[in-house]
Amino acid sequence: MPSANGPTDLPDSASPTLRLVQANEAEMIESSTMNADSWRGSLDVDAYLEREAHLRNTNLNRNGGITYWILVDTAASPTVEGVRRILASCETLRKRALVARSDGHVEEMISHGIGSVYCNQAFRGRGYAQRMLAELANILDTWQQKEGACPHFTVLWSDIGKHFYARFGWNVYPSTHITLSPKSARDCIYGRPKTSLLFAEDIEDLCTLDEALLRSAMAKPASSERILRVALVPDAATMQWHHAREEFLGERLRDRFPFTKGATVDIADGRRAWCIWTRTFGVTRDDDVLNILRLVVEEEKAVDEQAMEGKVDEGQAESKQGAVAAVAAILEQAQLEASFWGMSSVQLWNPSPLTFKAAKKIEPSAILVDRDDESITSLRWHGKVPPEDTKIDWIANEKYAWC
Image (tube, rainbow, N blue to C red; front, top):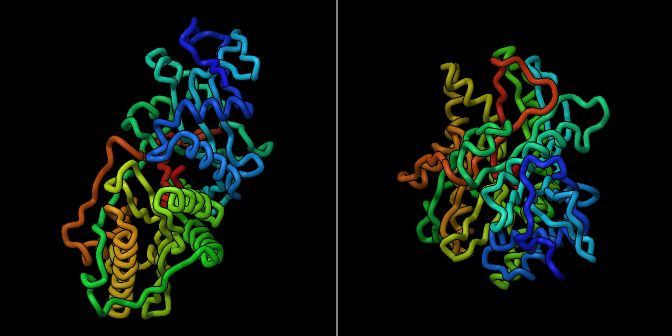
């Protein structure tokens, strides 16, 4: 296909003829071909385009779940195939979200995750990405929102530091992680709680329970009237989108299908803990990582709060110790899976104090890393702006939310 993206006359980024518009089918392919070197990993371009088509067919992305945006000059003529000159591009993925007011009133709304922000190398340094983001911020104020919908938020993950996107209102949020080494069975400590592996058919029920637990936790009044709590819903469609990626890549790059999707364990006091994971395949084996998408301990927050307030009795202390042991067993199972797939590490984003304690139990050298150059979680509030001193807490800011 002839490209409409040759380095011909380029408009000023402030030109009134620039517009951020939805890409047509041919432009979507053109845009993905342009950005392939940034995100294809070890796939060739054709396989990368095939993967993107595969993801468009997931439950999360069907029926308008993903939108491809391109910045174009409306004064320029498209090619005979209908491809306009693409100055910059990005995608938005529709996501279910929750917002809890300080009194515990929880509302469900539509959010969007922004990804694949790209500017053609030949067009960089001209302000096109900035123009695109400014236009996108305005569009997302109402995009796919019901009339009269309450204020909402959008999110992105910056790979270019903490400052660029903040200029357009996407403020930086905690972006920490812990990394654990793969572990073979002979290196495991016997006597930990027994784990069970999770498979695709287990995900929907666990996600339904997880959402109920999350809603219940957010429905508790906040400690201050100046706190808003927000979360992206960890639903099955989101997990399946991640798993569609790893399944395509596992078969294409490793000639293996990733059947296991996580691990669960019973805690002695009748609660459960579980994690859902995915395998991320990089350019080299050293870049291959088993990512924990979501880790859940039933009633974990309540136990942690009691501990911080000095209200934990002997039975509660034992319960917390049981939870730490359970999470340690889950993380160790993830290490085994990483070893089985020849991956370089296990990574878990923004661990809770309990999870970090469990990680130190199985790998004493584990440290909390504060990312400052890639995958930096960022959030922008849309609609009526809360009072200046209002704190917006992002609950469950974990890898599952990424796109």
